[in-house]
Image (cartoon, rainbow, N blue to C red; front, side, top):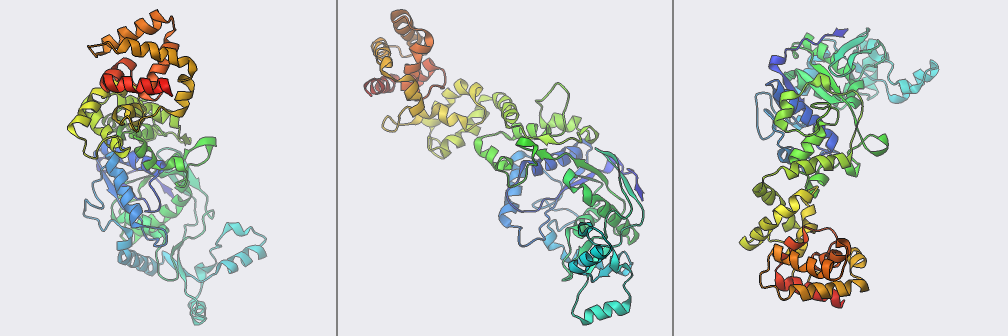
Length: 497
């Protein structure tokens, strides 16, 4: 059984179909991004559906988090929850009647069969044949007679429904991995419906793809082993008039973390919202996720989503695993952050200051003006938006709350700092014009020329006494923004500590 890629790219329909379990992780969102980019590149449609048939694991909280993640990143969809469409419902928990009807039709057509074997019976048969029990089901029930079925039911046993796999190789052309073949007999007949009538993923996923007219399936490499089962079921669905064609497949490379381990949804560094909370920009996160298996050019890492859509070619996605590199993600985010217009930067950063308690949830005009004046001093220095909190805390804290960071104080405010601060205070007190140039001239004259100090020794005590940190916005500008009285008060406090 060979499947050729015959789907026209003129009518592309792809899907993103997560299960609402846990918090959205970067691998999941990378899959959403590639499907979105593929659909947008070809002028096609992205169908978003929720695979929520596992009541023991699925949650509304997780469902809401997936919606939140997609909205934050700007990954929109053409059909699905909150949008609607012609192929709904888009939550599997609301499609049970559809699955029951399709399963009935498949059973009546002989595509499915009733299987009464228990796991223990299958293992016993494998052992008796000298085979490894890990081989799984042995297709024993394919030819169970009506009398045998009646006898099993008389014992109180109910069957599962299995798909009859073809007795020939299954070969398909993966858009990323090339030709892939699964040998005949290598895939046991899978269960599609439990004994209690509940449909399994092996049924619901392909049925939804068929009914929603999905043309291309872009999904993780870890799902590759299930592809022959899906292809066999698609052929069965075609024969009963449910499917029109067999979708094309592209299996995306796995995303790995440190040590080349698979980055699972339980791994803290895979949690998408960790990066949002730190202040990654949507543009920066999407740009980096796009690089997990794809590149716009060999010598280019920074691009917009419109540029990605224009250039995206699924055949250019690598088949090799992609490693999530936090340092590179941060570097890419910092580049996008520096490119923001100042007003945009201010609006995006203020919520992080509010969360830290530095400004009101709705900043006052005075708070907004102060941060707007500070923004040009720090924007080039930030990696993520939350970095601004530490950079500008000294401006928004009261004198009662302000205190230099212990590590910074230990480095810069020892006994040898006192004569430096004395000289700085003496030079600054007479200043009538509290401006950056005047502050710079006074400090350099007192500390470089007057005390003969090198800049590092001269200005470290002043910086830490005023801003509380060894790393801060430019010193003279910071002092101008802080104001003369607050600056001198802090320097005296540091001198007398």
